[in-house]
Image (tube, rainbow, N blue to C red; front, side, top):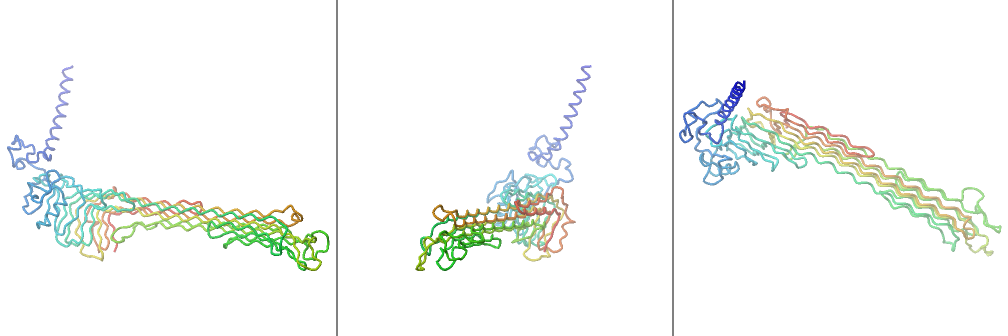
Length: 559
């Protein structure tokens, strides 16, 4: 029984080893460490069979290419950049060096071996780039020997401009970069003003990841309004020009100061009524509070004949309070971006920006309080009709100033766009590059920026208290001053609108007439991610609205 189990175990191990042998036998045919041997049974070592590919049956997709004497060869593994290199046995290492070398030596073709080339490539007019070769160029297959170009230092992997000489880009695997700058686009392949002399075929292109849009800046909070000053107490006049000045208005937080408090009256003269308190000033602004009315003066306009001070026979002797200022209106929220297609500005795609909100209105200033009425003093009567002095009522308090409105939040920026191929023309072009038999995997557009928050409106200043009554003589018989009105609060700024999400597009053409790229290439849309909409900015008053998500398209054209 034990022997049977052992036999079964050995059989299983044999099957596994055999399967691994088959796997690694085929793998050795593609292993760049032994591409010249390919595990040929007739050749015990690579040295015994320098023409080993002729000894075995290769997959149909792998061929043995001819040597191109006039081409520049590049291998990321075996190459070394140098002025005396570029042949099949002494390849260059980088594409950038190889392209410059080809321009100097009038070569029109660059053969690219399997490997990863971490660099940004600028095409040269009339110089073809052909990938799909093994690392030592002994074999060729678009399926088995990828020539990969990628980089993350900039936002463009391959760039071509003003190409008008015949050239071919073939057999490359191109990766768009992952960018981190705000609203920065990611281009795997960018073409500018290039015509039908350029052919791009049999390439695999991966869209990169674009940068998110910047958030809108927050609005600044409004300044608080200043408080009004208190009025002064009643007092005995010391001269005909004497008075009690009203409390000063609060300093403006925004643009609307409060009203000045009412002054007390100039003392009475012998033959005419004086002593009525002055009405406080109205607060400033369309929504400023009205000033408080002044109190009536003593003796009601009659000549003093009695031995005591005369109170008014009717009316209000005390100054009245000023009205409060009205609160400022809240600003409106900004509109979110609604255009998901974006625009091309100065050769760059740009997402749509959310609108800025509006500022909150300044609060109205509070009205100044009215002054209290004054009194005649018969004890100071001059029989010869000369002027005599009376008592000044208490003055009114100053109105508080209005609070400043909060600033608006700015709109969020649009997210960057991700493009497998981006084609740009300064003017409309009908002879466009030939692009076919490529597979394009869409990338990720950047998210739209959020709108900024609206600033909080400043609080209105407090009105100053009215003056009180003095304690000497008839000072306590005068009218008290009215308090100033409070300033209105500033309105809150509106939030900014959210930016649009960035687009994800396989082939984007600006200025290209009637291209048919959509039917001649394969697009893998399932890998694409349109940028999310930016959110509207917050506000205590009116928030901004959200933006719109980016578009997800295989092909998009605009003239």
